[in-house]
Image (tube, rainbow, N blue to C red; front, side, top):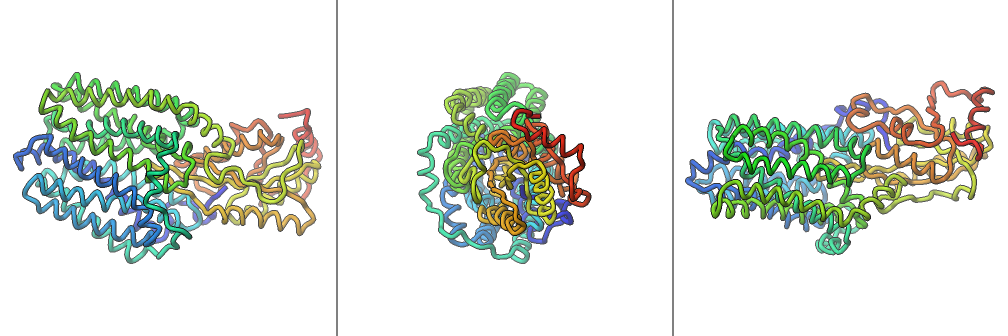
Length: 578
């Protein structure tokens, strides 16, 4: 399993390139929440109706949706750094133009340009951070999650403070901050290698022919319809000024970030993806119905909106994870296809809600939003079998292509191997050697396993290392053991999610191959990293149906004691499963 070098255990010891992109991520994640506190002020200052102001969301999201079809091709053709720089430049220009505009139509148009820049940025930011991180991806993922949390939470707060001065303040604020991020990105981010072959711009549309991906996309479209209805129209019945609205949505953003990063993976591990999503969509439907019924009572709307952050944070992470689980196509193509469908729903919802509100009253759009949350449940249920099978395969190390990939000769049929998990750190060789001693002394075959992760953060998913690099790491261990006269086999597993999910994937694989012992080393990651990104060893220990041996390379004995040897021999005996 990939892990950072011990000296890089702190996720905050990163190159300037990572910090530059992380700063830009904070500003990017501010994007939507930043304008919420100024929606009523915009309507008053520009003599616009709420339905006209809602087009700020529609133009931004629809352009983002369409652009998602092409950003993969653009990035693969021109490179990740150039895509980042162009995206940031577009955001700087159009956010500044929005601040200078004197009409609602002008702002709506400039927000569309902003959406194009945002699509270029979000499609490449996580990949650049992972590629630029020092000593492994774990710290980079945590840094990205931190940027997400800060952006979602601070965006409304900054929008409220700047909006209290002028409705133009948030637009100019984004332009200035993104300009700083643009300069830092241009200076510190290196040119990264391009893919061997460009991604076809038609690939995302073709990918939607796959039932699982289309089902998850439609479910996300319905979810986004309700979400952006709330985001676009909830500020009006609250009857608060820009500063107060900023505080309300900051509380909402904090809950979104916390439940997205920390609680969603733990709930998913305990109950499964589909059950958590079912319960979550019911919760969102209830919250939205409460807003609709209490639309004339500001306190009810405020409390319900803040509480919705719990469900939105969970949904954002698990929906993306579900897409990665069921998708049979490459991750960038799946992300683009999914982004296209979901952002279309988010873009159409504010416009439709405005028309409904103008024709009826303000409660009707919220009731419709509640209905779309609930309608997403049978849509998800129609793909339940596909998702359950994919999730089970993820636990078996077979979630995506490549799935379970043998390296070298397979383990003999009927054997009960000693399985050792290896990571990309300097202590891996010593851990493998210790496991080889266990295998030799218990007369068991040895299997060297490396787990490759697809990390999921909010709506982004990124492979944490190249498949060939993982294969080379396992092959190097097999060659080194062969030089010592020891024969071993190798496997590559692919897991979607955090380090905990990787631990459970290894536990399932060990059960499938009939292993009685799994050897693993102490994690070189720091306590903060293990808390934020899950614990591999902890998840493995809880999920494994066999003995788990924690190897300390510094103190591992050259020969096993008689008591330890007897215990391990009992563990690997076919009739004595532990």
